[in-house]
Image (tube, rainbow, N blue to C red):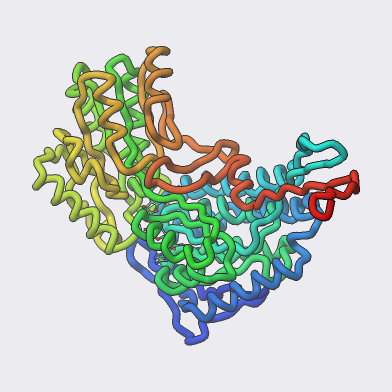
Length: 496
Ligand code: NAD
């Protein structure tokens, strides 16, 4: 597949590959040079309703939810195997759609296959639990059952990875699904839908509807036929979805934004912390919910650390994601680039000091796409917008701190609670600080590490529920207590 080939794709409703009713299409643009990479249907509420109807029938009439869990697991495992087979094609589609380096996309695809294999492995492991009933001659068992029809809305930064965190456990649990990828990055979600079909997922169990969040996404959130809505995206959209989902008191799983502190204490391994400070924020041009965009450095090493950081940032190579020499690609869209530029403006007006970047690159090769120079601000304070708000771009802010207590207090002073990291060699400090930080994930002497075995999710306004790990499967289940009386003795309560 060449990076310049324009693909024509359809969406998948009730086991059929279809266009939008209106015939409307969306041009999918390559962030590297703004060229058209693909054309896909642009559907609305009506197509979403049909997909919900198909998923409802597939759930209510089966056979998917009632199959032996091991039989479902075999299908989910096959999807993982097909991802392994098509890894390179999927990776190239992801890079075409997002601009990230193809090496990073390959890692993403390895994670994706691992997710299907992991949840296939878990699918038949929970046979319920016998509990001790307080009454004689009775028995009690607690079982988990699939929650039902699931709407799954995903963002553009990790299109297939985020969709897989939702799709694999939902299928393993026996749910039926309507996926709605971001309207700007649908290509790998379309491809995984093809792989689901090939793996033998029955018609109606997986549906993929392409269109605007305000139409397709809103229909999924509002519909009384949807039992669970799983959403990954921005905090404002998340709040809108919470309101919409109240129609039928849907189950909700929300993975929202983050502004994640990365704290470097003065006894840290300097070189290691420096390396990870760079990776923490400039990987995928900072478009990661857990990006360590908020660096905090202790006085004694602050100046030396920021000088070294600046030197390394100035050497980051921007370019095409398909070029092996590229270290950082563009941001996702023209609108997003404008948002990053606005934050850089605001930071300067608020008094932060721009150390490097703060502009678009001048290299002629990078003029068509949406590139932005890796940007460093120091002299940042806790109440600045550049510190408190999610820029979601290649911008790092640095705050200076004096004591451990101050670092913890500052780090926690945010509405977000997704992830945090810190660097120190002191074992007692590791214990204290990891407990004191109010975030869903805390990394000690590392940053931005996640894997399928461990739960992922946010404290505070970073979300509700957890994805990945055993908890990621439990999100897609309801808990039922089945109590049986074996004594058959009348109560004689009335009519003594
Ligand atoms: P976004 O909120 O703009 O869009 C996310 C999805 O929601 C898209 O598919 C969009 O079409 C849909 N949507 C938009 N309006 C909707 C509505 N009214 N009803 C239903 N759906 C609607 O987010 P984005 O810009 O695509 O992604 C970036 C955000 O995602 C960042 O805030 C980032 O932190 C967050 N994110 C979080 C995690 C996590 O694990 N916590 C992971 C990745 C991204």
